[in-house]
Every structure is written in structure tokens, then in C-alpha cells.
View 1: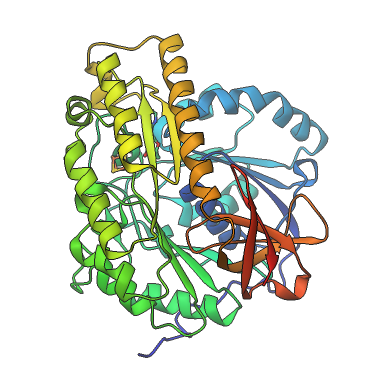
View 2: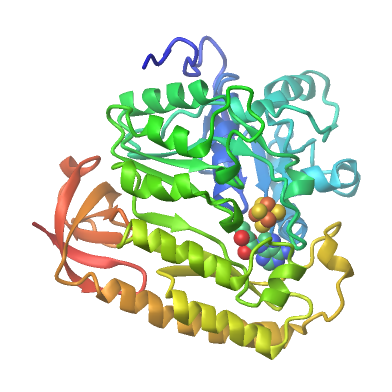
Length: 454
Ligand code: 5AD
Ligand code: SF4
């Protein structure tokens, strides 16, 4: 297989005055990666990342409004932005992401401190629009939807010495779950051409990356509308052959679209890690239907059983929403029952939060906030038991750990992950970073494992 490395040149600063960029990211993995893309685009214009907003010539606030009211977070920070502008009148402040897409011009009017509001489909135009603002001092909004989203093609430079990198393979979503804003703010599904993804991963491998996480709102739909006839299982197999890449992960999968071919990849593609994030959202068929999820609780459990049949040690994590409109006690109990039946390795749980423009806004039976909080607490304490038991079952085993860096908690420790996505801390030096080593697990905690180099 040939990987053209010419077609994807890295961004390089050439003879451009050095300026400082500060990016504040609110939200999900997808957004973290969008911020990496923004940084890559702006590097070409001479902007270097700084961790200090007070020193910046350009502040980008990259918002996500999937679960929270991102607007409130932005409003609460406006005072600080004014202060930065007072100190540096040439400072440019730009808002990007879902909130920008949703509010557009309105935000520019409400918040005079903003210079630019750029929606999800226009990140690639940021350098050009920034130049206009720099030259003319005008204020700009750009929220047009485009048939093809150019920014999914932007290649990011891996952080210096990074072992793990995100790679976008598709974006947008056609599913219209009734609670979710993504289809409205990110638009229809669009897949990246297969060869482009393979080229990018080969380049990442050359620069020392050993693990890639393939990103998409619904990765199982990869290639659905691609003229090259590719599909997700084929893509996984091809990535599995790229030299230098030792681990492949992906997120997120819609249970209905998880095909038998993809399930079998957990056996057939050695490099595919034994972990799947498979959001279930609820254990009640009535609520699943109101959510427009397209599967029943029994069908979800069948997928889990099939995954475990193909790959016995697979780690399964999920997302659950509590307090969706119409959720009764019995519905909530059905979610707890599903959790007991599946025993997720980890679970991300959220209180339902109404999103403007989504179908669920019109549903009756709104659940009061205190009840949502109570249900969330019950659910989280059950999950803690399951997570801890899962982690404890690792004690005494020897695990393959890809070392990612120094541990956050101790200077003499390094930190890495098992193939099942558990964090492991153990004594070791920086020379281990990027290597896969055998670690004997000595102690399990709720959020990590402790071990010794084997
Ligand atoms: N309220 C609460 N949680 C939500 N999610 C998406 N939209 C909402 C909402 N309106 C959660 C889902 C999804 C995850 C990314 O965020 O569980 O899987
Ligand atoms: Fe939102 Fe559903 Fe699409 Fe996930 S699958 S992004 S929850 S609409």
C-alpha cells in the first residue's frame, strides 16, 4: 500500500511575525480536536500557542453546547475578556464551535468584546477572515452551512513527543436523536476519503505516534455516502497494517449501526484495542423510542453479548441520560437493571438538558431538577461499584501498557493505558514514553490502577 506523504505537508511558520494564540476549549473530544485543528491552521499565520490568555494577541473560545448551556459559560467570562482588551487594544477575540453556529450574528451584537463568530462549518476560513479583521478592524460572523466541511481535512501536528493522536474520519450526524443538537449544529454526515486518512496516520506514525483514536459522531456510518465504496470495517483493517501504529481506538459508535463486520474486527485486527464506547442512553424501551434511538434494550444487550462472544475481555463503556421527558421511576429502574445486566466498565451519565430546536423540547412529562439529581446520584453510585469491581479484577494480572507520559501525581511515576483503556501508574523513567511495556497490576482504584514494571 502506498502512502503519499507529499499530499499532506505539515504547517510551517516562514518569515511571519510571531504572535500568540490562546485557545479556550469547552466540551467534548471532538471539540478538543477542533481546537488542535484551529491551532494548526493559525500556526501558518505566525500564531504560536500560549498557555497565558493575558499574553495573547488572539483568543479563541471554542464552544460545545451538546449538554450544557455554553452561552452561560461565555457570558460569565466576558468580564475577563474586557480586561485583556483594555491591556492590549489590538487583541482579537474569536468565538467558534456549536454556540457560534447556533447564535451567529446575535452573539456579536450582544457581546461587543467579540471580534469574530465562526461556526462549525467554517473553521478552515479562520486564517482568511482573521486577516480581514487584522487589516480592517471590522467585526465578522460566518455561520453558513457547507455541503462539504473543509476543516475535517486539516491535519494537526502531534504535540511534541505525543504518543497518542486523534484523527477525524467523519463528521456530522444523520440520526436525529430527539435530545441532541449535533445534527443541527454539525450538519449531515460526511466521511473523509480513505486514502487521506491512511496518509495522515502514516505521517503520525513517522513522527512517533503509536496510538490513534478515530473520531466521528457516528463512526459506524463511515463511508456511507463515499464514492470510493469504503466502510468502517475495511478502514480499520487498512489502518491495522500501517507500520508504527500499535493501537487503534475509535469513538463514538451508535449501537444500531454497529455491524457484524465491525464487531469481528475486535478479533481480526490485532491492533484494535479491546474497548468500545457504546452509548445506550436508557434501559427503558419506552424512553429509547421517545429518544428516537432505533433499538430496544434487548437489542442493545444482544450487541453486547455478541461483542463479548467475539472478544471475551472487551471493555464496554457507555453514556446514559437521566430525567429525559416522561421518564418514570419504572423507566429509571429499567436503566439500573440494564446496568446490572451489562456491568459497564465505565459510564458517563448526564442529567437531561433541554436543547433549543430539538424534537424533545415538545415532549410532555418534564422531570423536575431535584429528581434528576437524585436519579443521577443513585446511578453513579451503582456504576462506581461496577467500575471498582472491574478494576479490582485486574489485580494480580500483567497488562500491556502504552506509556503516555509522566504521571500527574508523582514525579517518579509514568502513566499509560491498558488496551481496555484503564489508566496505570507505575515507577519508571521518561525513556519508557512511547513504549508498550508489561506491568503487573498491584492495586486497583476507582479511576486508575497501580502497578510495577514486570
Ligand atoms: N442532555 C443531556 N445529555 C445529552 N447528551 C447529548 N445531548 C444531551 C442532552 N440534551 C449526551 C448523550 C451523548 C453524549 C455525548 O452527551 O449521552 O451520548
Ligand atoms: Fe446526537 Fe444521536 Fe447523532 Fe449521537 S447519534 S450525535 S446522540 S443525534
